[in-house]
Image 1: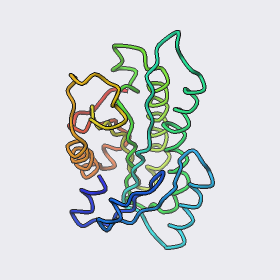
Image 2: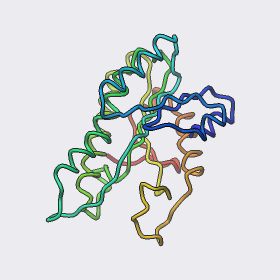
Image 3: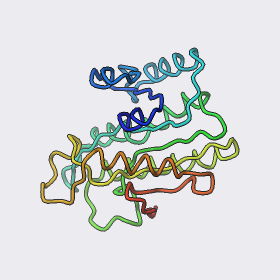
Length: 210
C-alpha cells in the first residue's frame, strides 16, 4: 500500500516495527521502531507527528500476527499476544493519533474475515478469530464515536494474501499477491464515504457480514 500510494503522488508515512530501507530508498518517510503493543513507542510517534503539524488524510492500521491453534492445544499466552497486537494495537495507535485527524479523514483497519461471526463455518484458529472479531468491534465503535467529526472508518479484509503471515498454510489455496490486495484496499479507501463508514469490506469490493 505504501508503494502504490507513493507512486500516485501521495505523501506516505510508514510506521514500522523495525525499519525499512526498501521504503526509504523509494523516498517514503519511515518512522522506525513503532511497536503497537508499547504505549511509549506509539506515544513517541504521535508526539513527532503532532510537533511537525502533520494532519493525516488516511490512517491505516495494518500490524498483525497470526498463530494457528485448535481446541485442546490452545496456548493462552499466545492468545493474549494476538489480542495485544491485533485488537488492542489498532485502538492504541488510533487513540494516540486522533489529534492528527480532521473532518474528511479516513481510518482503515486491516482485519480479517475470519473475525466475522456470520462468516465462520470452520472453527479453530481461536486466538486469531477472537482477536480479529475484537478489532472489528473496535472499528465499529470508532465509527460511531468519530462520525460526528466527519471521520469515516472502514474494516478491511485483504483476502488470502501470500505473505510470511500465511506461510504455514497449504499452498493449494486461492492465493493473491500483496500488490493485488493493496490495490483493492486502496480502492476501498478511495470509495469510503460517511455513508459507507462502519462497514467491513473485502479487497475485491464485497461487503462482509459481521
